[in-house]
Structures are given as C-alpha cells and as structure tokens.
Image (cartoon, rainbow, N blue to C red; front, side, top):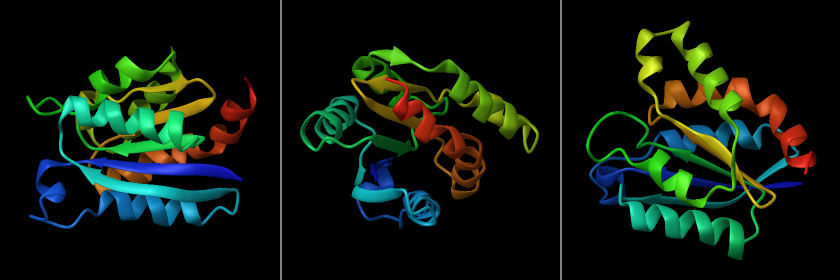
Length: 154
C-alpha cells in the first residue's frame, strides 16, 4: 500500500474564503486505485516555512510514501511551492515535471508557465501539481502510472 499525503497551498482556501477543489480531485483520483491510501490531507497558506515544515512532517514523521502538492507553482509573488520543495528534496526528478508540462501544453499553452517540480526525500516522492482541478487531473494521468516503479527503485 502506498501511503499518500495531499498538501494544498492556497492562502484563500486555508482561510475558508473558498472550498479547496484541487485536493478533492487528487483524493478522488488516488482512491480509484487500490494500491494508494490517502493518509493525510491539509490545506495551508502559501508560506515557505509552513510548506517546508509540512513536507518534512509528512515524510520524516508520518512516513508517507508519496506527497502530492497542489498550488503555488505559477508566477505570482506568493507562488513558492517549487522553492520550498527544492529545500526538502534530496534528488530532483526533472523528467516527471517535464512530462506533466509537455502533456499540459497539448491542452493549453499556459502549461509551460508551471514551475512544478518532483523529487525524492529519502525513499518518499514529492510531486508538485498546479492549483486547478482540471490541471490536477491532467497531470496525474501522466505521472500515476510511473509512481509505483519510482518508489520501488531505491
């Protein structure tokens, strides 16, 4: 069983201004596959220190195999998820992020603006996804087939 954490970065959703739909989309897709189990799910603000703390907690303390983030991968001043992810990963897996962008560009040219990253911390995988439910769905369909193999390689 692959234990999954979902971490949503959104200032407004973390304050209850609107409902998080991206995280619900991730959970719905993940739970369609019996080999995945969503163990943690939180919505937090776009604050680098909080993101780093939560990524480390999910992996180092809660021992999750996979952490999927959504939000904070664009170009605005508050979009700092890739920077926070870079601070906690040991190895980057650029091919995963490149595949997601390549797939996304076929649907919208705006996909090339995503700064999402993927990488390993210890034996756990972190994957950044964009903030929209549509982009979440499109990106997950690209990376989900390779996740079990990626987790089993080290």
